[in-house]
Image 1 (spheres, rainbow, N blue to C red):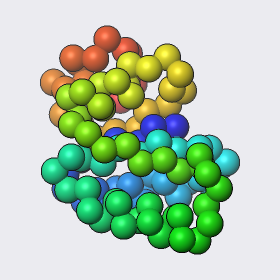
Image 2 (image 1 turned 120 degrees about the horizontal axis):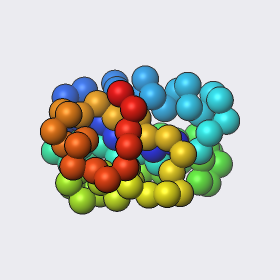
Image 3 (image 1 turned 180 degrees about the vertical axis):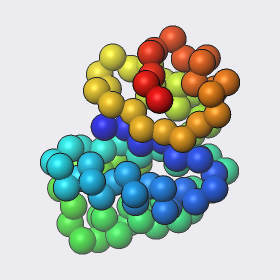
Image 4 (image 1 turned 45 degrees about the horizontal axis):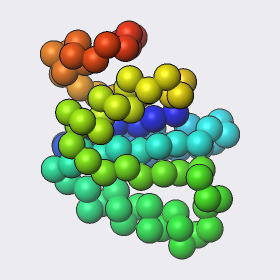
Length: 98
């Protein structure tokens, strides 16, 4: 499962999505907005400190137009959750249900 969060409330929205995904046994790749990554980096430092299994939670940083689109268009991804403006979603070649 891939999680993409916006610049407003990146930590809160990330936790809303991370908790149920991990509870269901999914591995997660999390990409916060590139405008505000510090809170998410700190969260992943906590994951490492408490001993989360390697590969169960993964943090990717980068601009949404490049990194986010690569995640959304990857055929290796079964599910993408996001909160984006529709004009940005329409740029992707992949069909995304809203």
